[in-house]
Every structure is written in structure tokens, then in C-alpha cells.
Amino acid sequence: MRKLIYFLVLLTIPMLSDAQRWKHERLSVYGGVGTSFFLGDLGGGAKDASHYFSLRDIDWVLTRPVIQAGIRYRLLRDLAVKPTLTYARLKADDAESENYGRKSRNLWFRTNLWELGTQFEYYFIKEKNLGRYTFSSYKGINKLSAYASLGGGGFYYNPKSETVRGAKDWTALRDLQNEGVSYGMFAGYLSIGLGMKYKLNERWAIGLDISNRYTTTDYLDDAHDSYIGIDNGFADKHLVTIYNEDGTATVTDQRAPIYPAGKTMRGDPAYNDAYMFTLITGYYKINSVFSMPKY
Image 1 (tube, rainbow, N blue to C red):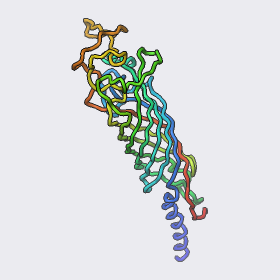
Image 2 (cartoon, helix red, strand yellow):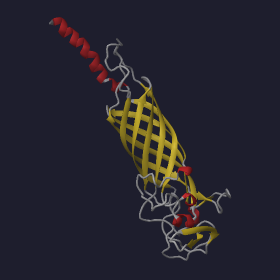
Image 3 (cartoon, one colour):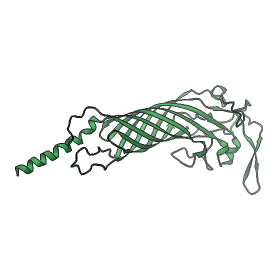
Image 4 (cartoon, rainbow, N blue to C red):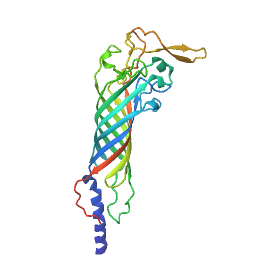
């Protein structure tokens, strides 16, 4: 009996120490590369914009790069916080939409975006340590974990466009006041997302992170409300549209006379802009001193 008790104690001690091991493995450095997708007034699919976490409004040919770096710190065993710095480029073009109303509007933009924020991650598929002991029955398994994320922060943006598509005379739109209002160069965002990680070894892990950013501005693409009747080469580029007898419409490449100031919509003021990141991620764990011996 005494031998059995000794054996159980010896078996339990490593398990208990391994259960607390995450406290010595809280900190990781983090990096990611991937693609950005703009979800706003310009571009989009064949239907009206959905304004939510929707694939139908993504212009796949206009996806642009994202680079992200930061640190990850485990507050609890299944809860981590991740401050990040992100560079992204966003782009949208009405010419890529299948909606004739957007095609005839004929607006396009791009912007560099610098984002500073923090993301909280809750692991619903728990992040587990790889087995450290030769008699551990779970050595080499439980490498996969998954999380839901919630975060926020701020970003800098500066939308630009060309006088003619392909002219490469990219001009900042903010100072032009194409809708008669001035807007700032900084805005905030709230992010929600999902992600997964796969441990390669005790130090390295790779993963996938998908998140949607809901912003506090509707001017990421410089389109928010109605035309104001100005002709500066950027505010109004809409094209002549021919309505056919069968109910279809044909958008020509001919510029139409500018709209007078009034109710003709240039954007939808009911919803702010959003954007989505899809990132391939990499983590390197920075351990504190762990004093338990390996068996």
C-alpha cells in the first residue's frame, strides 16, 4: 500500500507542475502576413452592401497585403492579450463590382493604413503544453488550439484616387472635400474574429487569424453621402447608363454631366466602413525559468 501511495505521489507531482507550466510560458513574440479586404461603399458584389461579416462584398482581385507584429501575453490559462502594430493597404474600385449602380458611379480609391491596437483571445479549444515527461500519455498530441477574439484600437488613413483609372496621379482626397465636409486622418475600430494555432515544438507555433474591423468612420473610401455639384475631377466621375427594354442596364465608358447638389447618393451614410484581415501567423515563446526537472 505504501509503495502504491509513493507511486501515485510521484505520478501526480509532474502532472501538477505541468498544469502550472503555462505561468512560466506567458510571453511570446508574434508576427503575421496576409491579405486585407475592404468592406465599404465602393466596389463590392452584385447586391447591395451587407455591411457585416460578409464574403459577398469582397473584391478578390483587389485584395492587398497586411503585415502585423506584436507580443502575446497569457493573462490566464485560456485568456491572452495581444498588442499589435499593423500596416495594411486597402483598395476598392466600382469597376470590379457586378452592380450596375456602382459601376456607373465609377469611383475608386486606395489608402495605406497604420493600425495600433490590442486583441483579447479566449481559447475555446484550450492551448495545452506538449508532454515533458517520457511516461506522459499525451506527449505529441494536443498541438491544436482555437480562439475567439475581441479587440480595438486606432488607425491612420489617407484615401487617394486618380483623375483617370490608370493615370497613376494618385491624389489625396481629404483636402478636396468632395462632399463638402472635412474629416480627420485618424479613426478607431472594434475587431471580432476567430483563429487557430498549431504547436510545432515547445518554442514555435504557426496559425491562422481572421478578423473583421468595424470602424468609427465612413470616409475610408471618401464616399459617405450625396453629391454636392462640384467638378474637380474626383468628386463626380459617374458614367452614362443606358437602360434596356428587357430591364437590364448597360454602363458605358462615357462621362455623364455632373449631378447637381441634392439627394443623389454618392455613398450610404447609414453604415460606417469596415475591413477584414486574413493572416498566417507565427509565434516564438519566451519562457521564464522553469525549475522542474525533466524525467
